[in-house]
Length: 112
Image (cartoon, rainbow, N blue to C red; front, side, top):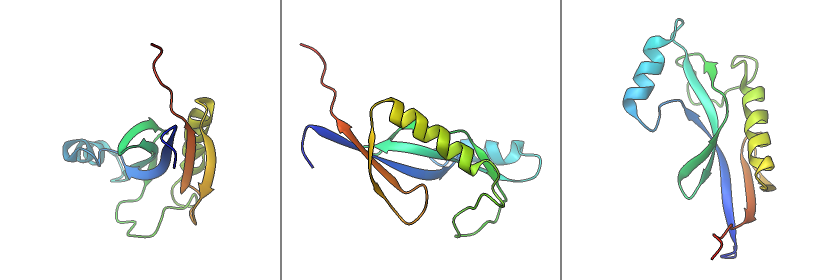
């Protein structure tokens, strides 16, 4: 990879996963005990973009969520992709899951 480009990875995360107290609040405030997930666009380990949240039944295990039992998954991913692409990112790779996406774009340097 050239120093003139930056890479963005789309990841799936539980809301509040970066802060334990936020995850606890999200679960306690849920009427049905659902976990709430979202897709994030991560550059250099830091999330720069996030899609809308969607519920996933608590105890869903290690299987990746599916639209059938995680309503809103598709809309969340589509919204995140719109945000990313509107900022000039171009998709360069796709993994086995529909959200395993890699994007690249030229590095934006501040004007001197």
